[in-house]
Length: 142
Image (cartoon, rainbow, N blue to C red):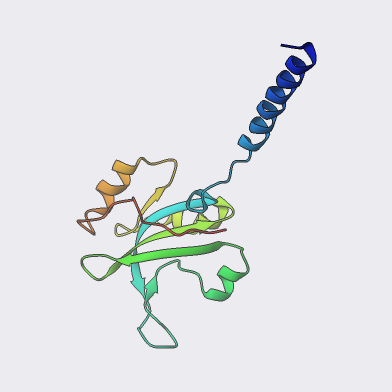
């Protein structure tokens, strides 16, 4: 095999190797894993009227969420007793949860994603929703 051909093959292999390294370093974060997240059980508040709809305690108004300060997104499901909501709250900054984290009411449970394990979260929340699983529960925020 001629020396020039060997050099061409070596350079081609080197170029392909460097290209694959460059492309492999582009990691995208799954939108369900971005920002600070809390899964909580909170009471439902509101009268159920258009002016005061029933909603989870600490749920922001659409105007507050759009401003991307404080809690920027949430999703919820009603508990088996119909008096509470299981909620995932999302915030850019953990400080947005200060009031929720300080709430000492017995019917408010708070779990931080990444600080509490999935079995811990599910065991606590199953007191309010017997079929609850963390898998598939949450909101994607970009």
